[in-house]
Length: 119
Image 1: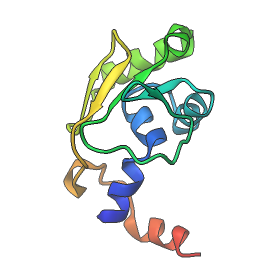
Image 2: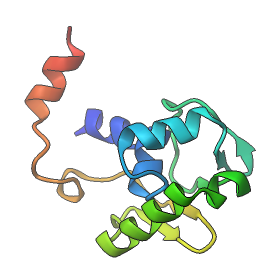
Image 3: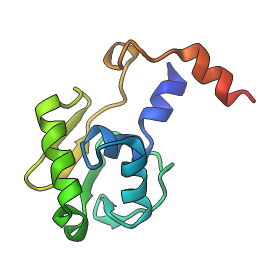
């Protein structure tokens, strides 16, 4: 459970869950290209660990992109996880808490994740 919490608290994963990108890869690229601010400071490291209470927002330039707007709209219609609070109009969200195992999708196979990272 701790490993899954660490993976879900990565900035690229949080950006994906907030709908900043249509896929995890797109969210990672938005982070790498200086499109995300954490607590008002630019962070371009996808593996940055987000802490509960941190505010994550898109920069004005990233929010203006059509792909980002489309991803935010799609995420809003899909719904957001309980541990994240998102304001779609402002392109801003708050990482409220670390997710528990019950909050994560049941399709995640922990055994495969551990096997991948134990190499």
